[in-house]
Length: 495
Image 1 (cartoon, rainbow, N blue to C red):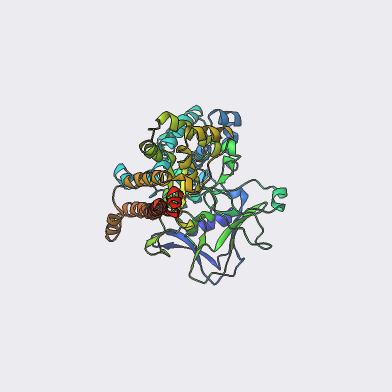
Image 2: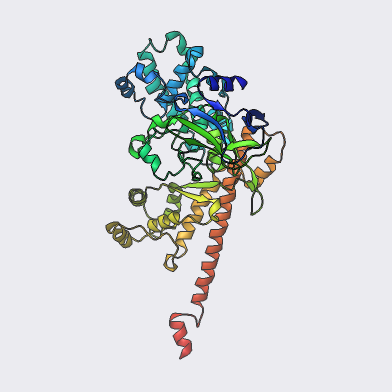
C-alpha cells in the first residue's frame, strides 16, 4: 500500500501522511487509520478530479468515437465504464492508473460470485432477484464483445483472452459496485445553492464546503442492478458518466453508525474531511448510507451485526421487500365470489400506473408496522365491482389505513401473503440461530443466514402484529353482536 500512496502523490494527489495511514484490519481487508489524534474538519487527502477514473477521464471514448460508442449502447449503464477499466488495465504500466489497479481486489464474496449451492441459502430474501448476473452477461455479450471485436487497433486480439473475458468483466463490475462514487460535473451555480449532500451510487460525496457548513446527512439510493446500472438512466436524469472510481477515497471501510469522514467535492479536486475528532489508532470510516444487510451483502460482500434494542442481534436497518404478487392467491382464496386472476391483474396494473409500487417495504426502524401502501393495495384488491369502478373513475387509491368497514379480509390477505413469503425460506429462524452458533460455518453461508434471519425476524414480528389486530377485531365483533350492545337487540331489551 506504500506504492499506492507514492503513486497517488506522484499524480498530483495530496495526503497528510502525519495523520492518515493505511492498515489491514481483520475481516475487513485494507482500510484507513488515524496515526495521530485528528480534529474535526481536518483534510486527510485531496484527489484531483483528473485522477478519478470514469468514461469522461478515460481516453478510450475519444479514441473509439462517440458515434460508435453510442451505436454499441456503451453510453447506457455501466458497460462503458467497465470497458474503459478493462482497456486501462490491459495497458499495464502504460496506464495512468496502473498502480491503482494493482491495489484493487480481484476476489469478492458478493452473491454475484456464489455457486448454486451457496445461492440456495439466500432463497426467500430480496437479494436473489437483485444479483443481476444474467443482465450483466447480456451486456457483456451484446455490447462489450461486439465493440471489442470491431476495433482490433484498440483491443489487441492477443489481449482478448486475458483482459476482456467474462470473468474480468464481472470483476470490474464488482469493483464499481463496491467502490465507485458518483462525481458530477462541477456546476458553480448548483454549488451556490443548498446541496443535499449525497452523490450516489455507492458512497456519499458531499458538495458543501466543510469549512463553512456541516455536510447534510442523507442515505444514498442504489440505482444499479447487476453490473449494468439502471436500465432507465435516460428517464430519471442519471448520467452514467458521473460514476467514477476515486483512488484513495475508496479504500475507506464503512460500518453502521461509525462514519467519521466524508468526501467533499470542489471545482478541481475532491477532499476527504473528518466529520468528528478521531483518536490515534482508530479506523477512519466513510459512509455507504445506512443499508440493510441484504444490500451490504449484495454490494460489498459483508453484513453488519449489532445488539438490537428489542433483544437479539442483527442490523437495525434491515428491511423486508414484499412483492405484490404474493397476495394474488390469498385474494382468490378469500374473495367470496372467487375473483378471477384476470380481474386481479386489471387492478394490479391500475395500481402500478397510479402508485408505481410493485414492492412494499417493511422497515425495522419504523416499529415493524404494517406498510400503509400495503394496506391500500389489499383494500384495492378486495373492492366490490361497484367500488372498484368508482375508484378507477376518480381515480383515487383506497386510504392506506384500516377502517371499521374493512372487516377481517384485509388483515387475512396481508397475513397470508406474508406467511407465503416466510414459507419461501429454506429453514425456520430457530434453525438459523442454531447454525450461527457453529464456529466453523463458511463465511458466505454465515452471511446468508444472517440476512435471511434478519428478514424472517421482521416478518414474524409483523405477522404477530397482524395476528393481534385480527384477534382484537374478532373480539370487538363478538361484543357488538351480544344482546344489549347494538341494533335491534338493544331496542328489544329496552321495551
